[in-house]
Length: 194
Image 1 (cartoon, rainbow, N blue to C red):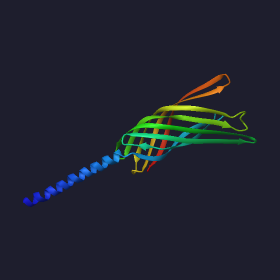
Image 2: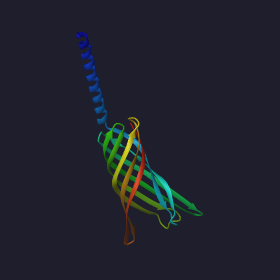
Image 3: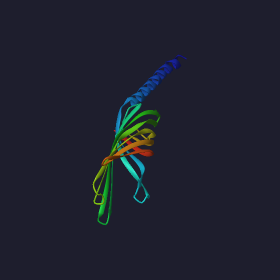
Image 4: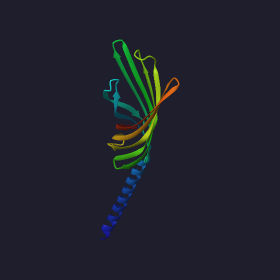
């Protein structure tokens, strides 16, 4: 009986130590700030002059900075569309700069996040088919909710649903055209962390 007690105590002590180190290692992993780069792909609809629709994919590059409970995610995207017909040509360029601010809830390898995305989109149109070059700047803001699965500490795949409100203004001489748009936007994400 004495021999059983003498082996039980070291095993119990070793088990408690391992549990404490494992819990501490998990807590340290959660408190680390991770930085990375991601790609977001979203389907978009392009309307042409004859009211036909084309579905395009717009892609942005994201730069997530993530802690255990918060993510700040700057976004940069560019889109260029060119069209030539006989001797006429037209090109449209859009530059998108924005950021997302999110609260995170993580359970095992799955993270659910919710917050806001906001930014600006600068558009310009030029070419021989246009009488003069035009440009405008749109502002956008809206709530977003998403989820991602972490395959490892360095790779995650997920999706996000956004409800985006955008405002644009164009000046036409003495008049100003103001456009308000409210739209949903799904985004598929792949993020790599350093």
